[in-house]
Figure 1 (cartoon, helix red, strand yellow):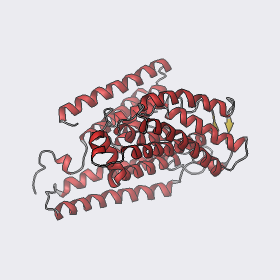
Figure 2: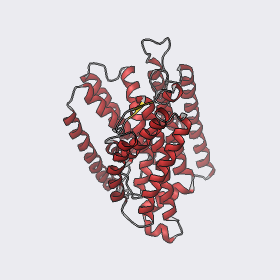
Figure 3: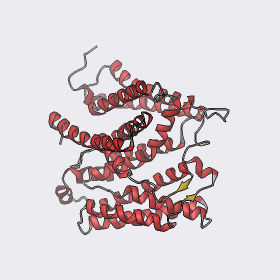
Length: 396
């Protein structure tokens, strides 16, 4: 049996940076749990943290691609608020069914994003400027839709999309889903070993790759166990995996597939690496930029649906300040603000770190002012770490 060779994490697909982030997340959980007297790692709190992270996590997955392509969107929180209030208004005040209201909200989000994307792609206006204006404009639009009045949503099925009382998939489905994910992880590991052997590339020892695959599989089962241990006092059975978290997971998987398996994903990273060279080799930069903003609109609408379903209402303050959390999650997850590099799974860890930090400080009764200062500085530290990490390991 051969020994692991230097750089084995690269050949086995293990990202050293993501490993460090995972360790940070675990350490943060342990520290907050000790300081909160065991409350932070309780099933109830972890269930709530998972639900609360889903909205930011959904948007941060696509924000990774936006930043990779050397753009930025500061208006995502305001657009989500605008679309969310519109969907709730159409259901409550206008009497629309929730599917029709959601489709109308999606259409409006697409118009907004294509408008901003057109200014950026066709006229060359920096996306920072365009979306900074959108941050203010669409927050005002969210107020104008319902004249600042809260719009409740009452459809029971729609409310389940936000989690809450009946918003879990149940224990049996949760265990079945965990087992399926574990099988997929091991199947992918074996497929990669066969592919490397077929192309006469070296394989690491089987025990090492089995161990590296067993770790995330174990994490999946632990997470499933935690979700299945949370039970609302008035219910006869535990909740199981929250539906918002399931939606987030599906979004992350789809975006990861787009990044690694589609021409569009390759184009986005090529544009971020060198926009001029991308245009010279025939990549339709303008069209890809418009498609990217359209994809952002779709996921902002999904996030708006989950958010108002969880709150059971649409308010004009919905999504306020969310752009900071979304961008921070992407950057903490390894997305370079200079463009060209980013990770969908990294954004998942980044969103969990941001929400865990906020939730932990809330449990410790840290005042809102101090929480805002700390979270803002965390974003700066993440950018500094990104610069130093890439300098150290020679990444572009």
